[in-house]
Amino acid sequence: MQLLSIIIPCYNEEENISYFYDELMKNKDFFEKRELDLEMIYINDGSSDNTAEEVKKLHEADNRVKLISFSRNFGKEAAIYAGFKKAAGDYAVMMDADLQDPPSLLPEMFGYIDQGYDSVATRRVSRKGEPVIRSFFARCFYKLINKISKTEIVDGARDYRLMTRQMVDSILSMGEYNRFSKGIYGWVGFKTKWVEFENVERAKGETKWSFWGLFKYSIEGIISFSTAPLSLASWMGVLFCVLAIILIIFIIIRTSIFGDPTDGWPSLVCIISLISGVQLLCLGIIGQYLSRTYLEVKNRPLYIVKEELE
Ligand code: UDP
Ligand code: MG
Image (cartoon, rainbow, N blue to C red; front, side):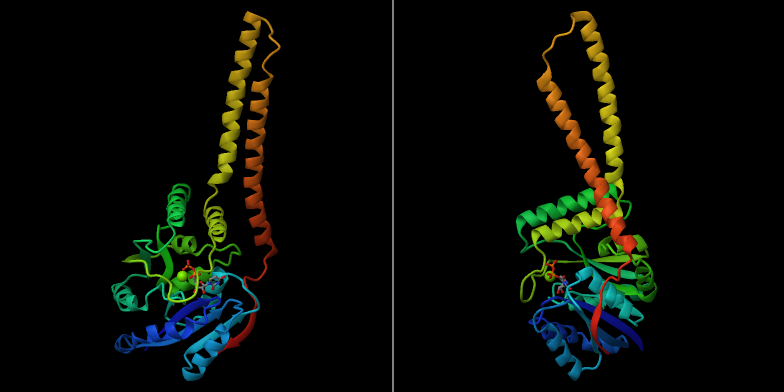
């Protein structure tokens, strides 16, 4: 028998907990046939509803259900890390509690693991049911980050991934504070098979991500996996120096031929505001990296556990 650890981050998912469990158990025959023992690790990420109670009910009925409750909401990334840390399985898989990661794909995914892949990742081919503006910005983000980062980050990739022990250990070795899982999975490498599926809408409840939240998360991704914005600052510096030299030469020649006209302050104001804008932008970019470095150096724990159920 081999052990499969299923990691389920939950934040205010009371309506979905048992529903998810039932859907997962539809694969019971497959788990038996493939000789897989299960361990289901629910991470309660500081929910304010009855998520923990729902998991406890499940735990009473099935001792393979485990619970880690955080002392407050630390975010999905911290929950994923806690789950991987707890996972004892030969394989681990990360799944959302809202059934947007269909458990029915597991048999197919194991098929690829048995063919020798280290990890089987999923990506949704459509964004059906999602606001149009959100899809548009998501596409732009993936285009941009793949241009400026060496780590491949696949458009539409979900966190739903099945992986071997070896890959789990590699992910755990990346203990950074500012986490961006999609990048971390790509960065550790390993032979990955991509499985595609049509977008499934969330079973119950509402998404925990606001547009602003997603925007900040995308900045996190860019800063964690690319230093291109930093070199942008130096390139802009070079560009403006060259422009300034050309301007100086132009003005010297013009003055020596036509004398010194006193007008020209509007152009001066334009140039000053443009360049100070660029300077502030570059300073801001440096600030973004500096603040991440600051948080990283503090070396705070990624999460704090309040309660654990074995
Ligand atoms: N989640 C979490 N902590 C958070 C936000 C979300 O553990 O701070 C969990 C949530 O319960 C769900 C998964 O992460 O199981 C994905 O969240 P959601 O469905 O809201 O995101 P979406 O699918 O809309 O991207
Ligand atoms: Mg969801």
